[in-house]
Length: 322
Image (cartoon, rainbow, N blue to C red; front, side, top):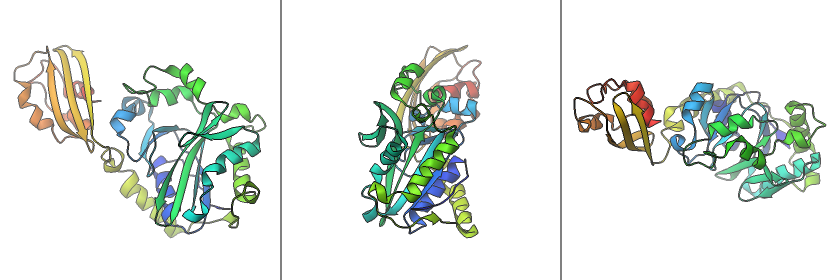
């Protein structure tokens, strides 16, 4: 099977690269790649309700949105990602490809549910798919030695499965492949073995042989990926603004008293806001609300809220919208 080498660890660029593999090439092709610490949300997810955004900012973890559905996932350099693209008619067995590769390496892996791969009852991989005209792409993760503490924190939001689960619970449900493959000293050696199977032994796995060897992208093709990353995958409108509507409630005690907000976001901006509590202020908050509507969440910190809440800064008030 043909392949493209990708040494980038930038999540936005790698999302653009995946889209190029699907829409910019005609061959059946695969690519193995990694991201520096990043959270990748699904096409239809709300960034504000699915991800612990304050933790991401504190830790310098990148947020990106992919072009496929499914849930939010955490990547770091100890996670190996794979992308496989080709004509739909040749991709019927693609979903069995990675479990077969892992089995060849000695891992008793199997597909489970709609888009997971399990080993001994624990998840070691998740994948998603997308169609474009007559082509299909599947891409997914292979957890090698991912930091499970960080994985837990980035996805810990109120009401989520991880909100009260803790690392111990995550460890019981997630498997790092390193513990099953002691013959590989690190993720690079593991990735090399996966690459060799995908490139040269697909016929033995029951998949059509469409030739092997590297597809070298031209400077023009790489420039096209750069442009796509910049114009789409790095933009606020794609990462946050693509989020569907969602409603939230938050309550905190400040020097002025307790403030509670209920608000809804649509396409990443405030669609409705209600404010209540036992706080003290000089003017009614009903005068503040019209100026909040239409703002991005991060813009709330710039609003002068002093007349409505004694001694409260815009930055403090903005914490209610996180």
